[in-house]
Image (cartoon, rainbow, N blue to C red):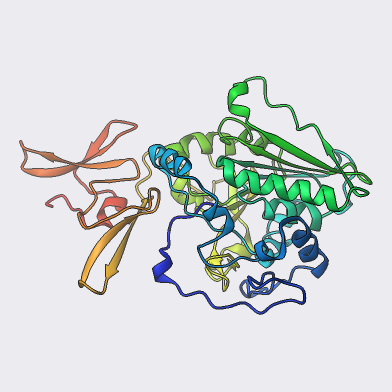
Length: 390
């Protein structure tokens, strides 16, 4: 999970209690909100077998999937306008996310056999621990498919998969990865690795690629989707066009509220799961073991009026945070996409720009994708301090 809303200086993380056999990083025991669902110890042991005890339940900001990133990967991310700041769900957070009231509501009741079972897609699988936990903990899932853009993070996931195969050769075998779509450029497909459970034929698969090139296409047949990455807002329309084709009943676990990122005239088929509506519905993560807010949706086309209203000219989303600097007694602005901060009030938020009209001696606001302009400040810029008279 690539994240961008918090600075490590803003949060002091408490130490976690340890389960027997857990490394000093802990894991699987942090509170994850009111439900307090706990991951079975045998699943924690299996994750430790694959990744090592020190990597299961890591907390804070200095995670293995952060330290692994090279200078070249960081430079490439900056050129894309994104950030490699990283965090991940802790095991209990995954267990809660997969509860029947949330993503688990899309799973069949019977265990999977071969290709007969649920398909779970993780867009931006990072270290691969979340995907592997889902695959091991939920026998109704026949195929878990993770896609990760950053090669060094993909390498951690692939190494974990191969370690599991090495330790349990009687239970698993390596398969050829799934073929990529014919429309995908072979050069963009990247490396992939696939593990199969011998007794059932269930598969766990990781691929190193941009999920807009390969992976997102599986959204049309996935039963559950983890989308807990922070992507540049310019990609929201393309994302929404694909999610609009999601399978009926598909469940979506999202870092973003769909109300703020549905930048499409395509009707949004999702509605928020009832259990997830309260703001207190949080999930245990590496940067916030006590719980962090995510959004859980179900694809429901029986809605007469879509619960989520979108549009190309979304005025609410902003990649900026206003933060108070106590030392200098002044507000500054932090960009959650690039992880850069500045004192000057930003002139662009989302796809809106503030521009000066010399003729009218005032600022106006221009929506770049559509060319629409207006005098009233859109909410994303108004929240930063802009008005028509600024």
